[in-house]
Length: 277
Image (cartoon, rainbow, N blue to C red; front, side):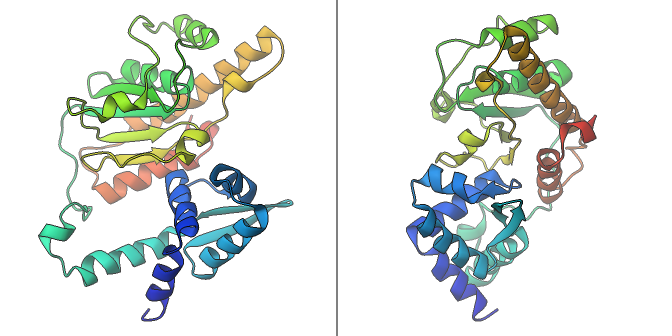
């Protein structure tokens, strides 16, 4: 470990390698194609390959081949060991330094939890998630949604699905995520990204150290074809999110410590919606 930790810190000391690491942390537990990482960060493919090789060599990132593509994900075991060393050994447990970092031993208290769902446009997927959580467990959760680059109105196909399912759409609107960074904004207990593009983007850390998760799924807005084919894509997106929301509200949040809760949230994002049904 004496050599391993300094090597890992040195690797993360490079701005672009750190940017890759941060992107993959936001996308965890996803495995992300190298080309998507390069495109998102504006880095040439050959240069990206060099950076990813360094991160993989130091076991900060795992590589997996899928056909002709190379996929990358955070090596969470190594990252936990690295951060544990920094927080427990280097800072010697000083409360003035380490207090913001949860030990994972305290369960969340029994109360209403604030939950924020984020996508880019805030016109379909995050709106679905907000509506589904409000309907499924509005007595336990207060649901919100926002977009990193929201439009001016909800997608009409999404509105039609929600109305057909009996949701109240009068309370819904597209809004920018910056609304929830204001001093008077609610403090969130959970923050979920439901599209890959939103998770790829840089965003400030949320106050209060909420449990975060990435539940990425295809964008129904991008589906081309007949109106019937488009409507089907929105129905499928709604159904996939419904399975995830149902799995989430079934979690015994009040009895899980933060580490167990984070794992449960990651498992929901990792599982295919069909296995959650």
